[in-house]
Length: 510
Image 1 (cartoon, rainbow, N blue to C red):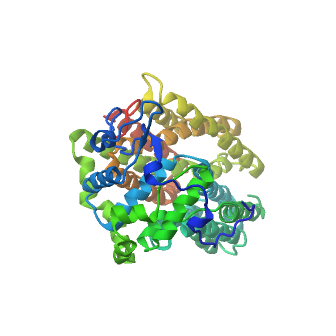
Image 2 (cartoon, rainbow, N blue to C red):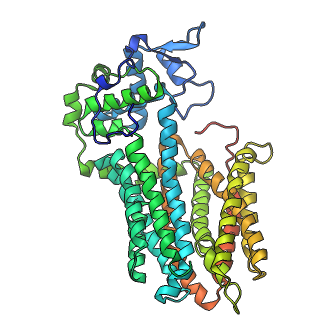
Image 3 (cartoon, rainbow, N blue to C red):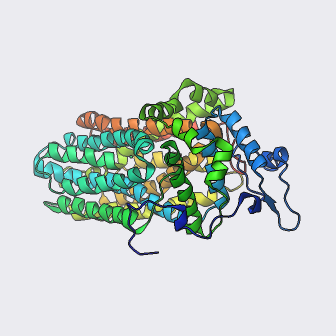
């Protein structure tokens, strides 16, 4: 495999020799649970499809009839039974049987670049606000609209790329996001006016979901780092196009080749072939006839937020209460987090009314705060599974402590005092956010999990967009008002968390 990969080359099954095994000869672990909504010991596919594990090796064989019956079962549950939907389920099954391997771990790391860029640029904007005031003249409160511009881009990007990935393909969208962030990030470093910088930050946000000239060097450095991440994604790792996207475009041979490529990368076998797809879902011409138009793709995406999809989240009193509370928490935290963190360099700079804190001290303290926060997520990994603590105990306690520490930050203007409390706040805040991200999808039923988490994310972004507006207007009356609002929002989220009716520790997702 060459070190530099041609990202534009189309793949064919002939490129991946030795990975195909006929369906009848393929053997898979009998413990594979393909239905996320079944409980331990209730493997519907083994009971209903009569696929019995061999006592000698614990593996079970496939037959085309058993596979067809399993796809029929899934189609009946989903309510979609087109040739495309049936073949998509076959592809899902094939990828599941390949299992987690080198390809997925590489993809996992490269996806982390997106999360890194998202957080990196949020911190970068926060660090440039004091310098933008010095160079371009907007007031300390007005300059906070710069953060608002970034959040506008983040909201537009999150909305656009989700749908665009179904139209132009996941692979192009996956790579273009970092490319755009890198280009506009480098452009920010050359901004000639405050309005221009805001516009570039907004464009940068679409790509992502100091001292004197120092802020320019900071943005150029961040832009260069983002470009390096894009280069690694695009040229050093070959991301296979989503097989289901290729299928929706009538490109069935390429879809099969993509699955073979994943198996080849993982050094595993796969039973998927065009013959199997045609046997389960009809000939390739049948799928091509049902080729999804752009309008149909958009309709399917928007359908995730229809009453038909949202209704099951309120199917029971317990689940409905859980849904409302978790959405409330995402909203309050979505505003509380940026009200404090997005303007922290400003707070640190202007904490002493008589003499602004030196930029070098502000940057040093901000860096220390960020580093100290990292172990918080690692601690959460252990506490979420501890007896008597679990998810609810971990997230509620960390949110309560975060809110209290935000209020404590305002007690003194001494840089050392503020550094101590910002470090503690960052540590417990990372625990809170880490558990919130893991806990949220666990409480929603599998068929509606995407809808529940999608709405939570949307509410979080909208609240984040409103945070700079609140900071500008409240900060004019009292510079500490946005900090008080942030602390109050964290405490409101804590109260809601105490009322969570579902604990997912040690339980399988619905």
